[in-house]
Length: 284
Length: 156
Image (tube, rainbow over all chains, first blue to last red; front, side):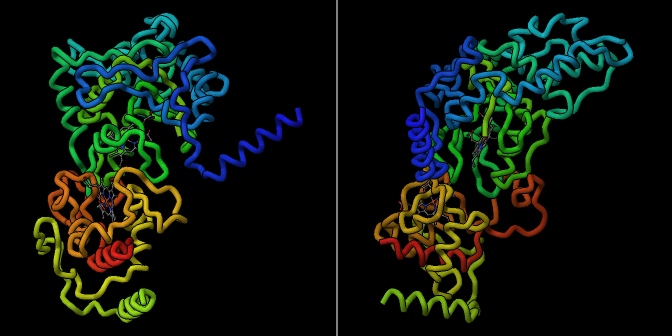
């Protein structure tokens, strides 16, 4: 007993000698949540991600301790918001006196939905994110107010939708009527913005696996969103993350909810086709 | 010998000898990526240069490059090549060109252009995410470029 403790102390000491940079992920670790949900964090890249051989979840780039937090829902702080969203799911709101549950049943009945968003909506003639679709229900079916993008209840509800799809492969459609939006997103992904003139691809395609100062660059995949970040101790939405990355190129950002970010979300999601839905994930 | 040069350079910089004509970012002449003329006419100060290279709000070169000479600066990046020996591999004019605008030496380089004020897409106001307004300042001043070049020349 005592001996075991000594070794772990020694291990901790050794880790700190190499500094925080040594808190590197175990490259071969696999993610199984609650001992039962198997998550694909590495797989062959879809053909349309033509410059990638394989696609990797951001989970693989995080430290062992951050990785472990996502392996059990009791350790995953993001699940607190999922629980609150489950309540909101069953609560009637708006002039129609309806709740999400009245139309859709249990949250679990929505398994598979998150995996195919953003998605073309025929009636509206546009590509919609899951948040846009939730707001369509709120405004047109419940007579309730729309939620702001990545604000208030929209993130917890998106996390609830993600949580019931965990383990299912991301599979967003990029052909047919969605194609032009997808092309627009792709264009943005490769545009070098700001005074640093960096594109998403410069960091997340050309340099994933490399350190940029203290950050271990991942592929910038969004299969794990919404994501709980240790840095700001809350759940973060995709558009907020995009905004932060664009800002870091010393550029004028796009707004969360803008057509540009909707297109970028479709494009980035499609680069992760084949990875499992993982949200709410844990990142640093 | 080296020590005296450094001390002398520091002294000159300290005396504020920036009276020579400074070359504006839009007037720099690149020849195959290299810039022969000093941007300020004031010799660079390698100690100041080392500071610019390792400070986040300045050059932050270590975000992308590792430099063994600066071993005490934590979290050096691996996006660009190791800069050890840069002063052997390149002439002063070539280094001035690379630091001022690396894209003149390496086509489509990932490396930001530190002495450039035009041709940006969606230029922001520093790291605020807001649109830039008014005159554009380069990422580094002319003298900071000279200081960085002087520092890189010591990496032999």
